[in-house]
Length: 209
Image (cartoon, rainbow, N blue to C red; front, side, top):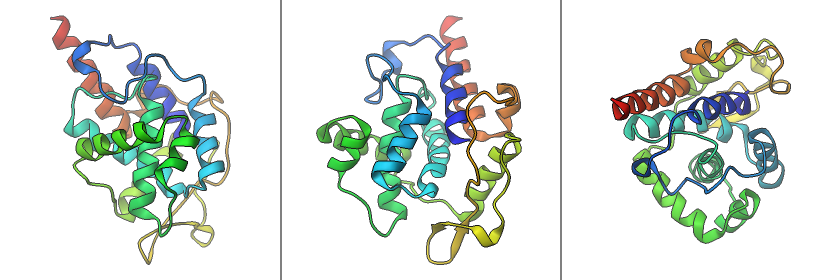
């Protein structure tokens, strides 16, 4: 679900003309030769990332876009944003985490670059890296509602953890992208899409006028 939402977001924002004034450290010269879904799978497999650290990426997108209206999640920024977001999320939410060199290796970038991106990420998000269980559940419920191929995990099967006693309902099963998912417009109920798409479109329109 997360990969699907990110793919829709990048596909929308890729239609917005890129200007030199909107370039960031997260921009690559060309889109990496790996899909968002496969990239997330690689991170989960080799970095043993808890699912809560993937879900909170959506919260991070909202926060960064709210604070930095020119920033967009596109095919040129999404991969670096993901690996950097996962890195800081693991440090903020998990009892144990890997060294940056390992996250960098898994993410396909150098340790030096990840160190720079981490500082940039923390600046963009204002060091606001945590979220309540209620906030995360709200994001998760919105994702499930937009994806008929998924269901909410019963409370007894909860796996994710945030803090000592707060829990998160996590994904139950996985389906591929493009299996009868609703249109992008219906996803506007999810704040990550409405903030990053609408603000970017507004910027594009104002620049062209």
